[in-house]
Length: 393
Image (cartoon, rainbow, N blue to C red; front, side):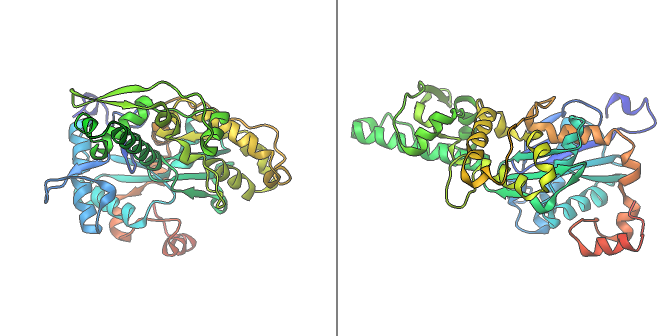
C-alpha cells in the first residue's frame, strides 16, 4: 500500500483509461499515469496472452478484466482497490456490454466505493482549460472526431472511420513484405537464405519499427506517393531483431506507412475529410471557433511531421470547390497540449477527478446494487429514470 494512504483519511481515487492497445493507470491530481501498459493479460484458462478487446462474450470479458485489474492495482500502483473511488475515462462510443462488465468487476469483485464514468473527448479539455474544441482521437482501431462546444459534445456531428494505428501498421507490414520479396526475386535462391522472414514478425516489432523509423512526409511528397511519381527517398535504416538478425527498412517504406490516413477516395474517408465534415455538420456560428481549436490526441499523432501534414492537407482541401463555398475559413489552429498526446485523455480525467465532481456525479456501490445497471446516455431506461427524478448518485 502506498505510504500516503495511512497518513490521510481520504484514499486518493485512481484513474483508468483502458484503450484498445494501451492502458493508462494512475492517481487523480498527478501529471502523468503511473503506468502505460499493453491492454492484454495472460488468460487463466488457456495460459495464452490475450488482448482485453478480444473477448468472446460477457463471461470471458469478466475473467479477463478481473486478472487485468488485479495486475494494475497490485503490480503498478500497489494499493488495495477496496473502498476506493475510481474514475474511468471512456469513449462515448464504448459498447454497453464492456462498461457494464467493467462496473460489475469493480463493484462485485473488488468492492470499490464508487465509479465515475467520464467521456474522454470532453475531459481532455480540462487539461487545456478550454470549453470548445474539435477533438480528434487517433486511436488503435479507429479515429473519432467529436466537436465539443461550450462543454457539450455535439453528437450529431461526430465522425469515425477505421483509419488509425492498426491501418498504419498493416500498411507498413505489407510494404515491408513486398520490398523483401522483390529483394529475394532479384537475388534468386542465394538471397533467400540470408533474408529474414518479415512476414512472421510479431505486431510488437512492427509497432516498434513504426515508432522508431517511420514518419509523415510533407504535403508535396505525400502527393507524389499517392500519384506514384518517383521522388527523392529518405535513407534506409537498420532494425535489429532478436540481437542477431538485421532488417533494412527502405526509405520508401518509412515515408509511406502513414499514408492510409491521408489517402483520398470517393468515400471521403481520409482524416482531413473527417475533420472538415465534422465542422460542417455543426452550426454555422461555431465553424470559426472549432477550426481555431483543433486538438489531436492519441499515440499516432506523435509521429514526426503528423501535425504539419494535417494542417497543410486541411488548408489545401479548403481551397477545393467541395468546401470553399460551405466553409469560408481562413484560419486553422492546432492546440499544443501540456503533456504527451498518448495520455492526454487520462490527464484530463486525473484533473477532473481531483475536483469535487466525484461526490456529485459518481455511481456508488449502493446505487449500483439497487439499480442493477450502469446509467448510460444511450439507454432509454436511464433517461426514464432521470425524467422521474430518481437519484442515480
